[in-house]
Image 1 (tube, rainbow over the protein chains, first blue to last red):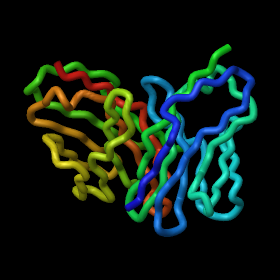
Image 2 (image 1 turned 90 degrees about the vertical axis):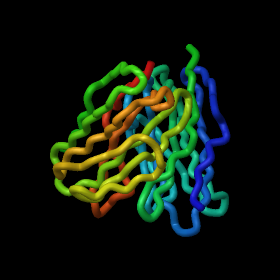
Image 3 (image 1 turned 60 degrees about the horizontal axis):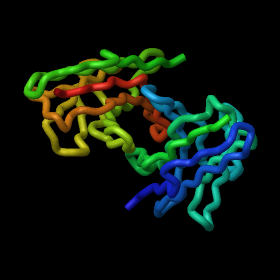
Image 4 (image 1 turned 30 degrees about the vertical axis):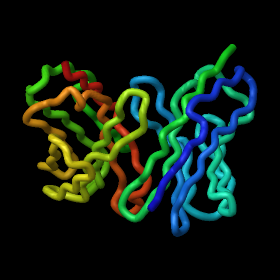
Length: 111
Length: 113
């Protein structure tokens, strides 16, 4: 069965520091992969997606993610975090008829 | 451009009362529509999805139901709310062809007392 894991429940980084959020998936075929961000009390916003092609995907707000098939991973990165990046981040994998979301990683940013 | 609306934004209801949450999409036709629930501090749970008018698939057996009376309208209902129905309800849509990319509405915060 398809599944998505996000090993880090909560991460705290300093403003200006680099960020990497981990995502691992289990899927039998070539996956469609997504990262979403959710600010408190808000809906989810799509940051980026991977369907095929270049394994390094650029998204909005300066985020990027790299698909590594050998590691079944799709980690999200940002070179310099801003205080406004504090939010919940969800990795997701698309299967035949639905999208399966990971449990989320909560990001705190300290000045 | 496409937009998705949900209302109400917040709702406080007593146990045993009925529920009706509405979701509408603008700027697209024949979308797939989804209802998710997000309990406090937890991930997203898919409740229902619909690929067309009157076509509803249920993911989790519960006291909730969904209906799609119009192409771009999706309604989540309950006849009698339970305490466990409290949560953040999110509606999402996707285009039929690229159905994996889902776009979310602003959500409805439901508190059952």
